Length: 139
Image (cartoon, rainbow, N blue to C red; front, side, top):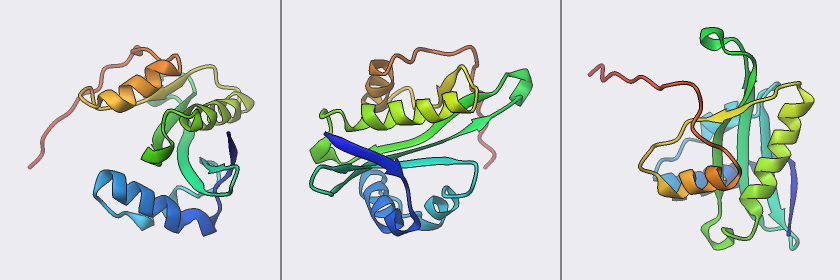
């Protein structure tokens, strides 16, 4: 069982450390910017107060004619605490915040080869959406 709450600036070292450990890239300034007003940034703690993970998102509207939707742009769970409902608790709390803003859709982007995150989002009930991501190498 975890408790979900709003992220605080004092959580940033733990957020950045977990992300760096899992992605191999330290980006503390990126995470600091995610605490901006209007964005949704939640953390989970175990019943013993240990940092368990985080989720971040925002409501974006009218991109290429699409109605407002909640977008999940990050979710990281301590690997020792995966498969214990932490990610689901964070996702559900974020969806409730999106609903409170009046949106009826939740979206995200994932690497089609990242089976771990694909499995997580599918377990939350997400399926392929109506948009197609386009990409171009500009090097």
